[in-house]
Image (cartoon, rainbow, N blue to C red; front, side, top):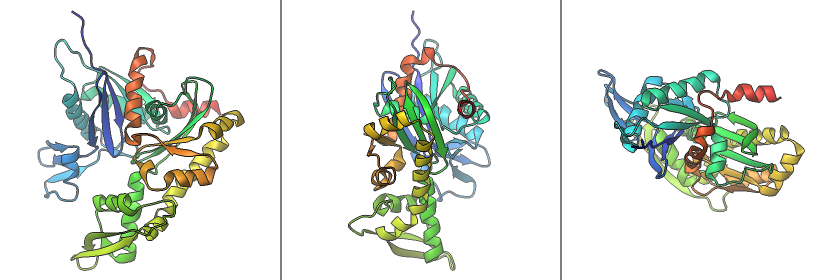
Length: 345
């Protein structure tokens, strides 16, 4: 009897975890949030149900994200979260052994952080673990033809990090990563509202403001959004209106950090590959690429056409899934991306 193994591709993101099941596609899309009882240590909820608890839990329950800036910050909670998600997408039995798992990691990851990811996946139920650089996975998921020597550039703006890479011949020629993503935009909005209006708003509210009126390129129409929060002085509820133009000014700094890093990567790229990128354009992936005007801002700053990939939030997960096709040829364990990049310089 032939044993059937459902290999998994995992986009282990700061904001969301997406799991690709070999032969089935992306089955799980859940926020990277767990709700745990502090007294017993028991996991109460994972994913969307836990995210809805953020800022609303009683004293003995804490809702938290076990990942920060694209890497694991709480090992035990990450293991428990992955255990639950692995069980939800694959049924383990005598005839279906533990799955092999491909996990995406940021370009700037260290060897210690790599080993933490590998150990967490093994403890959660993986048989073997393979790592893939996030922008490489994003390029595969965006259906870019990176087999040949022709150069392509991918800017993957996730929740905690922005991964930038120049790719050719199924590999990464130049890459970089900055801890700026969707969460940084949310935090910038929350700080602005507190500083300028004396109102404290939660993460979810700040994200809604970003989605509804946030932009990093000037809009022709000035939209407004009403938000509710807590008065910082007396603790009473307060409601206020925010305009798209003021949020645009607020988001200029984090957006500039991303564009500056893209320009820095282009400076480190060979002239031949830059010429290819100028012809092929820059592909944006990740949830952060959906902020209004991100493609236009990068086009203006770089002088290179930038386009947002189809279903940008799932590109890394689909790329991890595609890499399952050659998992037998991948190197198991740490790939130590940062050290390899230093050696190439």
